[in-house]
Length: 323
Image (cartoon, rainbow, N blue to C red; front, side):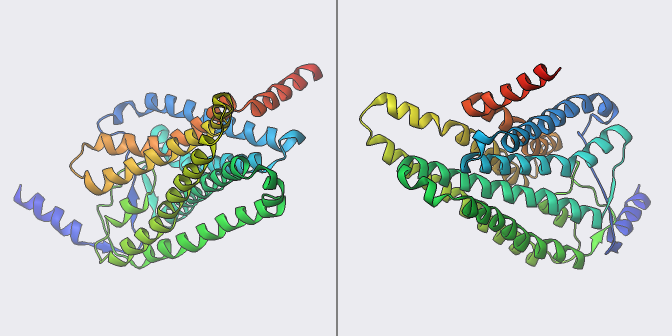
C-alpha cells in the first residue's frame, strides 16, 4: 500500500507543458453513458433545430428585418455556437468513451465556449437597450437603432470577446500541469483547467476575474438599469391594460436573461465555494449551464413573440403548399 502511494506521489509530481486532459461524464453512471446520451441527443437536436429555425425565419421574412429581431438572430447564432462547441466532446465521451483531449484542443474549445458565452451576455444587454428605447423613447427608436448601429454593436461584442479571451487562454501555455489531469466536466472550462496546474496560477486567476468583471460585472448592472428605467416609465402610464401590454413585450427577454445568468452564476458558485459538493452536482450544473439557454431560448421566443410564431407558421404553410 505504501509503495502504491509513493508511485502515485511520483506520478503527481511529474509535470508537462503539453498535457492530456481527461474529460468526466456523469460520475457513478459510466456504465450507462450510452443510455444517458439519448436525452443529451434530444436536447442538442432541440437546440440546433430551434435556433436554426429562428435564424432562418428572421433572414427570410422581410417583416422581421427590425433591430429587435436582428438581436434575436445574434442570440440564436450565439446559442448555436455554444451548442456546437461542446457537442463533439460530450457525445464523443458518451458514445465512444473518448475522454482524452490535448491542451491545444482544450484551448480551442474554451475560446469558442467562453467566447460565445461573452457574446450572448453582450447580446442580452443590447436587447435590454432595445426594449428601453422602444418603451421609453419610441419616437426616436428608428433613428437611434439604425441598421448600421446594430452592426456596430454586433462588431463591438465580437471585438470585446476576442480582446478579453485571447490573453487569458495564451497564459495557459506557460503553465505546467500534473500528469493526473482529470477535468470535472465533459468539456474544458477555464476555472476547471487552471485548478490542475502545478505552477503559480495567480496571474491566470486575476485575468479570469478581470474578464468576469468586464463581461458579467458590466452587463448585469446594465440590464438591471434598463429595466429600472422601463418600470419607471411604464408606471407613469395610466391604463393598466397598456401597462400589461408593454410589460408583455419584455417577458421573452427577461426569460432569456434568467435562463442564461442563473445557471452561469450557480456553476461559478459551485466551482468557487462548493469543492466538497458531490461530483454529480458539478456535472449536472455544468450541463445545465450549457444546454438550458440554447434549448429554452427558441421555445421562449416562439411561444411569447407573436411575430415569430406567425413567421414560423408562414414558413411551414409555404412548404406545405409547394408540396
